[in-house]
Image (cartoon, rainbow, N blue to C red; front, side, top):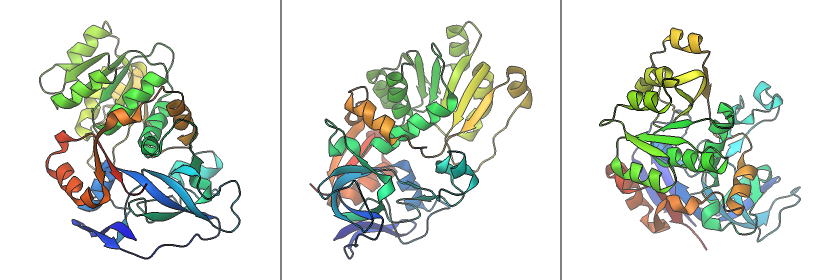
Length: 340
């Protein structure tokens, strides 16, 4: 069968491998669709400290159950499913307090073990989610990025009437925008430095957009809020140098959600944090958010296919990687059709 394998940084190709067998407690999924994520690009570039090569990447995917391992109940051959990539031990401190997405022994499908950019993949039965009526396999392949959005918004604990400022209108910023609207947040400002991304943010319901280089964002926020500041700020740009500006723009009792893995230090002005009693929260992966996202998709309150800019065949995937490397402004979410 075919698989997209990264053998080393910048060394990747579609290759032939053996079909895996469904192990006890696992399910063999015939992959239909998979999305290319920025995290996949980091692996390809060698910027992910957790990955071990060679690796079949891909953590956003959906498909059909082809085989069921021993001891698996409630899952049948032919079921339409999507896969939560977060694998946790269930015993460590984070798992014991209900935070398995930061498990001490965390594994991520597509990072620590082979993922969805292959025609068939073995996954733990506990990570399998059935698709509700009305959610297609193409849309279901995008549940994972929306789970990221649901997780960071949950960590920020929105209150009714809160305004939200999103830094960055890439895929994660746009999923946060859509998820926030689905959860009832009405006043949402999005900032980016690429006009096409800001156009998309407005199409998807942003109340307003600001250009990070042409507009005075702090002045605009001050005018919008009569100097009070923004209660919710989501950092989907993941640029450490922006943190001081976020601290200044946050309202008293504001919450800032951080998503980036950039190891560069950020300047943190303690006075800004203390005088406003700000809350800075990290958000990694998702904490059991797949059911919530699937319910919102089934109800029509989320439209994941609005994010898709390219639908490509599996054989076209190397070209898609090249496009994302050299012309990222041309793409939003790239969806790869692997099977039918």
